[in-house]
Image (cartoon, rainbow, N blue to C red):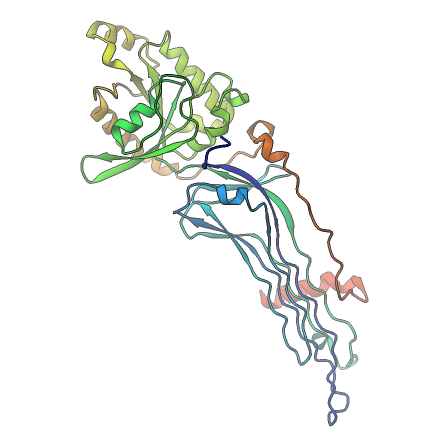
Length: 388
């Protein structure tokens, strides 16, 4: 994976900007005695914003930009002049990116559409200048509101490919061969296990003017949900697929057992995967005669649509496309348009990312500390109620 440009898991440190302090200035002019307070408001701190970009396919740029900091708002000035707002930082990510709290593993948000924007961290509000606090009994307030502090959070970005059909199977089950046979994708194909080292997407044309997206992930082995093999790192990519296509070769010793092992690994990774529509394809059937095929059919798992295929000869591929198209457009799949993301736990983390060390600057003290800290929260609540 070190030589690959496909990065689907990255840990970064984000910090929004702190709000600028309000000014404690008093108007001074030769012919205006007792001009009164005219300190301006501080500017708000910059936001940290996530934005979906359909032209991106990897989180690689964030591998080289581990710290994303927005700028602080500037302090207010004389003459009720407002401080400049801090600059927002926009993080462009591929569509299908989910965000988790790096400390707790809690799911925060996800980007599912091109151009969609989510404020990951809000910048601090700017403090009010002293002219806001002038009253009939206190005409010369010598205090102003400080800006709200910045928010700092380490987050994990996890890319989950958007596809209609996800291929599930053991190594050398023929998944990449199938994808190359029915789409324009060119995944690496060889006669050794774990040839596929990263997910691949292919657009499958269906009866002329229709199409659907098929996703291929590295092979799954027994124990993948506990970290064995490569399956655990890429199982996240089939969480968004509407239909799961299980592929088991015809020369398997026990097709039913292999299917149950694969299904068990999916359930242990994310129990919601068991609710997805499933189709079974028995691959490499060009080596079977009618008698062997009938014998295999008697031992197939019950309750799952099955088709015999051969990506080399093209046997059963049209039937497979018809079956997948029906499953994708079934009413059940239309209802299940959303999914609940499981929180990250120790098994679902990438070790080298979790051990990444952030070097943080010491937090600077406010330039304008409050004279009386008891009324700080009260003033922020008052401003929120006025501004909505």
